[in-house]
Length: 177
Image 1 (cartoon, rainbow, N blue to C red):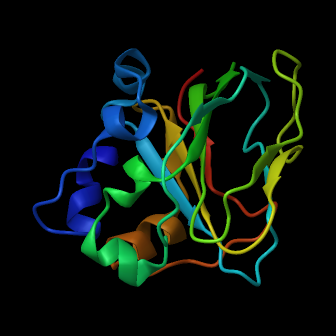
Image 2 (image 1 turned 30 degrees about the horizontal axis):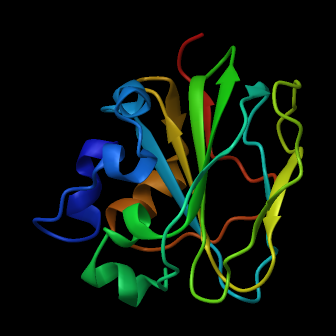
């Protein structure tokens, strides 16, 4: 749950959807919803894919600096997610409602490339784009009560432990349509 994120990262630091999305109306869609943060290391696969079927809108660039998204840097400030250069895409899904996909640049990774076509139907697993080099982060936001996250993801997140994920791994299931 997005409201619980500060307890998993930094005591006393509020994770702010409006700052992350730079869109107050869009932020309201995801209040109380679920959030999955996928951090990429320099040696990881650097293409990112749609998590479910739907129709993506055009990506919106939110310009900013390129700070490190390494866990040690994030331990000092979650604000990095709301400051770094990022692309925000809303995917309209029949099953999950609105899903926000946010690719966040980081040190040495200023190039976020989108390879999909806006307003054209996509299927789960279809490529959305890629980072040109290095490690970075993809944040996926789901609306309130639209997804039941996988038990292993919840278990390790509650312990503050990263869970290594592969393309096609189970993230969760829809709770209503």
